[in-house]
Length: 620
Image (cartoon, rainbow, N blue to C red; front, top):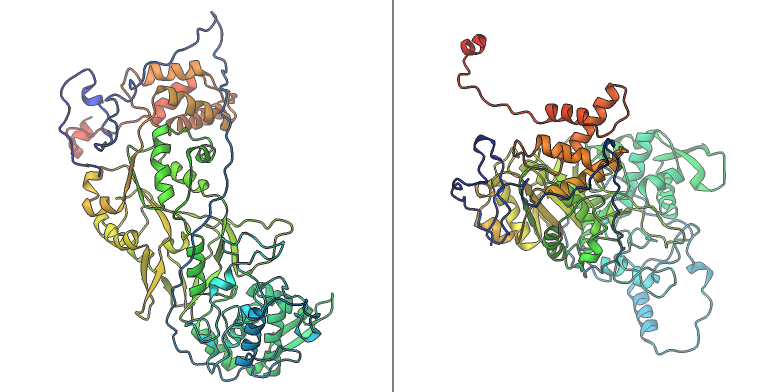
């Protein structure tokens, strides 16, 4: 365990520089090798090639290492959390008449016949499938057999079909994983949401989908059938059945054809006057208008199958995942085991040395994609999950098998929160105007990484923030509260990282250090790394790199003032050089005059005067 107690001030020696001593020295734990007292002189001077007499400062390109790409790790199996249903008052009417050609209702005799067929000894091949058992046009035929995908029988209140398991209900772990019996099936150990063929398989009920259809047409004014299916992200065959039921109830009517194609999907629908009272009740309940939500227990199962825990990330696999960052060996050795465990890590050290950039590169080490739902259904309340500002969607490859479009294929997310973080932002955010929830940051970061940057600078005290994270870090379960007061247990499958440039001894206690097992100090670069960072930034900015110009910068502005290096300084100084060169009408280059001007503007100290009274200020 790291010891963050303060050390006594060092005695006089060659490394002490009086008022010029670096005031932002980082606290180094006992298990971290101690760095040199003077970061500038922590390594011997870099050998410099002699330049010909009278030669101008020229570019000296450096070779770049080659890297390889690793394999995809396998996630762990799933566990299901079942929410408790909340009773709802159904609308005044519902579509209770089955459309022509619909499959027969589920019965115990059908289950017995299907079970007998699966357990019977092998015999001659079965006859061709009867026409009435084939799927309707537009439905996915590549899913598991109908007997394996059958949902619970319809009850008096269809709105609660996705909550508690019932007799004959096949859980989401059998729906979610595609079987390896077809050529188009993905790996059996990954989560793959199959396309639902019935509302029971989707975990929804007819009444809830009817409300979504009515709200979609209400907010749009009028819509084609195919546009309604796209808005709900459900198969057209299911949406057409719901629309036909609403037409029989006189809630919607056909305004005309779409001008291309035939069928109900191209018809343009609008609301009638008979739906006014029903629509008012629906909007009073919630105004969510988007893709159909996924049942909460199916999302929990998906999180467990796409877990961030137990990876097998090696040093060779990590080397090409950090882009242009100059990473020391001790950084790889510190973050690699932490990423394999999926547990929390604590970064500390002086500011401007790449703690945030390292976290952004760490999430790239998790290869493969995951599925994130557009929204969840928790006790008949809608919770928005997908956030385009956080989740990076992945385009489908040609020939990929179909999947439930209520889920979005994304890269593993990286959620960064800083000084704006409050305790209220870590719970379900309920908006009374629209009457649905927004998922908190840690919930959106599921199966990914959550970075609490600038830890200790939040509006809430560090102690209160740490107390909020103790239970999730210990048990991998977070407790959220609905506005009704009910507690909801959600999985905390997140690789949490805390980053600070403040004194750790004033922020953390033993309870926090015990739960955050990995601590890593991000140290300042030495002179050799300072050159390497300058070379990388010159290549990214399109400026010729000149090693002798960087040597001039170090000799004139770092060594005489005992100024410590920082990893962000090459980028910041180079940007100022480019801005000044453009202002003067010159070509950006590492010119000593431009470097001098950039240093004068960048390194400024604001020392407090001895007497700050207005009289003394006017006298000066």
